[in-house]
Image 1 (tube, rainbow, N blue to C red):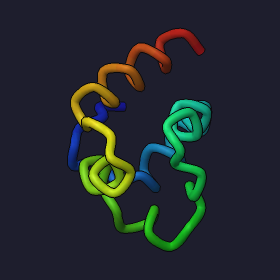
Image 2: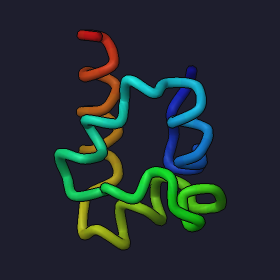
Image 3: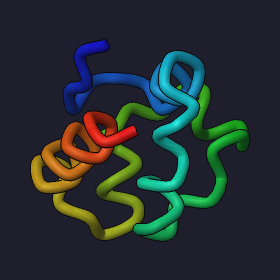
Length: 66
């Protein structure tokens, strides 16, 4: 799965459930909340004060290890 700034959080969780620990590590604990269904990765990072490009790089690296 290609993950970009525009990828919806719900798409990531649905296609890569093993990614949840990476989100939880930066304080995104609401993976099943209503916002996750319509919020993209860039929006979620902005809401949590996280650089989206850095998070995407880290998420991709994490997913390669699992």
